[in-house]
Length: 82
Ligand SMILES: [Zn+2]
Image (cartoon, rainbow, N blue to C red; front, side, top):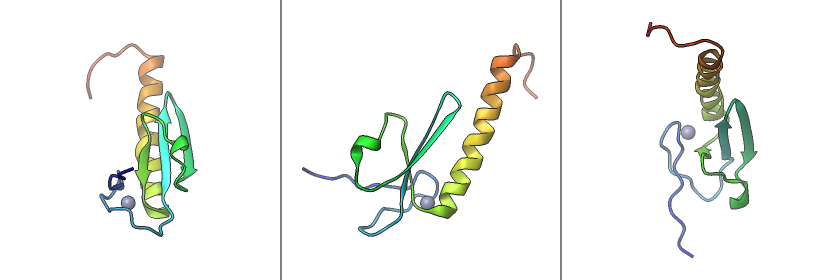
């Protein structure tokens, strides 16, 4: 089976054989992070590949702000773009 190159969704690095990558996804305010241990069953449709701790921290802060926006969008009727 041909394997496609796995690329970090944060920094664009290409995954090599030995790396401590993560599979991360944020769905409806739930953040799920799993070690990418070659277990493709962990992957969902919205999963993103993250190459290590540094990018995982960036990924979390990006997605936390998105979740905060979504939460506020659900709580309030949209009024105007600020
Ligand atoms: Zn990265």
